[in-house]
Length: 220
Image (cartoon, rainbow, N blue to C red):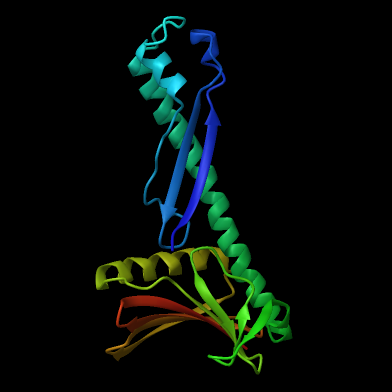
């Protein structure tokens, strides 16, 4: 499961040079980790008319300098990326804080239908980049996970990235402690606690047949 952020910018100043107002640049940021700051890929696309104008194939337009267009692309990309990533990171942090807030009332506002297989409630709030959220029947926990299939190197990077982002999301009064389960199906886990909250958060490394993943447990 990928999380993607797309930023689109219209090159509105180019008609002054070419007489055509059809230029669009699209930047897509995708990640299988959390969405910030996780730039995995980007793509830039434009219309056929734009390409014709750029290459001079359209006789009604003057040829636009490739060097100028390259400069425009690079500038727009670096101007767009911080805003797109900041917005995506903000959505993740907002969801984490909302889950913690709902823990005060046994996570009931984010309970979905009852899953008869796991005997848990489906979670209705899933932070960007996570999946398969569930709530315990007794209201004592809410948990999600990352997509699986990570190798050990990917797992280590994902673990560090999530914890870096969580430290930025949560206030300084939240204390952290890390342990290593040292088992074949479980590795490091970081616990976040605060005296002013009823809920703690634990992020841990877990393994299954398809590979490693991270689980997120919000516990009362």
